[in-house]
Structures are given as structure tokens and as C-alpha cells.
Length: 126
Image (cartoon, rainbow, N blue to C red; front, side, top):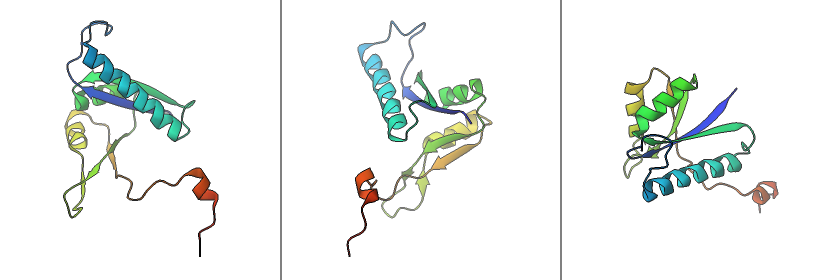
């Protein structure tokens, strides 16, 4: 199975190869690339996951990337909605649903703190 990590920076893309992007847009693009590198590293995907970064309208570009890559599914992170945690919220998933025929899976946020590798090997205190 191929895994492609994609991140779209909301903004107006410069025509061509990106040399004419503003300093802010270049910074946003570089930040997105670093975020994907961090995500791949945190999940031991450095050597297996491809990465794509784009600048523009997120739902449209993610749909375009999914089409170009012949994706079987798009996974989108979500936030908890409201104070009472009434459900998941992902405006991007709703927009993707309208922009692409590829099924969209909404991944809920982590509900508990991530354990460090050292803590995972320790026995619980009694």
C-alpha cells in the first residue's frame, strides 16, 4: 500500500515553479514541509511515505492530489466540536466530499497524552 502525506497551505499559489512566491508563502510552504517530515518521523514513515505540499484552496488541491495519485481513501484529522464534545468537526472533510469522489475518512483527535517510548516499557506503579 502506498501512503502519501499531503498538506495544503491556504493561500494564492504563484504561477510557475514557486520562485515568485512571497516570503510569507515560502515560509508557509517550508513550514508545511517540516510538519510532514515531523509527522513521518514520529510514525516511522521516513522511508515509506511520500510527501506532497501545495499552496491554494485546501479541498480543491487535496482532491486534485488524490486524483493524481489514484487514492483509494483520504484521511483527514478532525477537532472536537463544542464544549461538551458533541461530536467531530472537519470543515475540510465536508468540502472534500463535494470536490472529490474519493471516500473521506475523518480521524478523531487523540483523547489522551501520547506515551513516550520509555514510559511504554515501564510497568505501572501500584
